Length: 208
Image 1 (cartoon, helix red, strand yellow):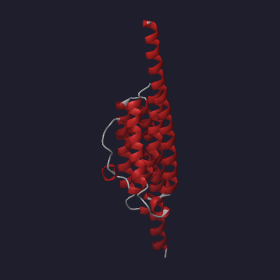
Image 2 (cartoon, rainbow, N blue to C red):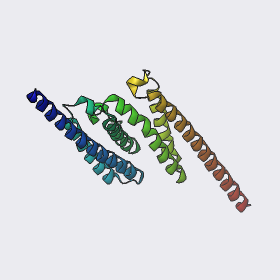
Image 3 (cartoon, helix red, strand yellow):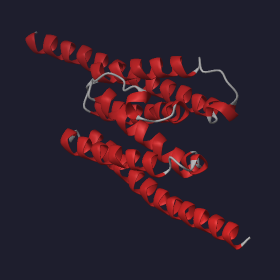
Image 4 (cartoon, one colour):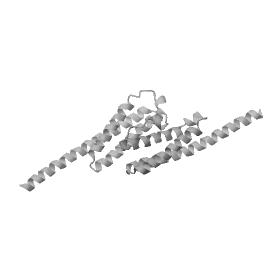
């Protein structure tokens, strides 16, 4: 009996150490993802790439350290960290005009990828608003088209929330964010048209 108790204690000590490490790595991973997205919005591609690379190394570390503990690998804190990683990679790619990264290439599970894809829409809206403030309507239109495509994909994933990680709630968010962005884009376009018309009238009056 003592041998069995010692065996169990050893296993649980190792598992607890793996859990502590996973919590630490998950927090650091999320921080790198946040910094990467911030760099994207500042148009600092080099810094964004550096943080994404650091995040990628942490993803691999978590996968290796938790390979013997699937329950820890699928725990909420690791799942959230992988979702943030997917969001950072997707945001970087779409804003920079690169192809949408594949979940298998990123090394994240599909549910985490879908969550990251959904939350990317909020970052695309933020980027679009920055573009509209600088009258870069065409690039904002490109991002809005991507937001439409993301929503179009997500609504086809019709499975119970227990399988998709409450994707329906995220879909509602994506739809609302996309429609608000569409309204902002329409307003900006109308303002630009009005300015152009007023300038044309002003030039005509100056010539007369």
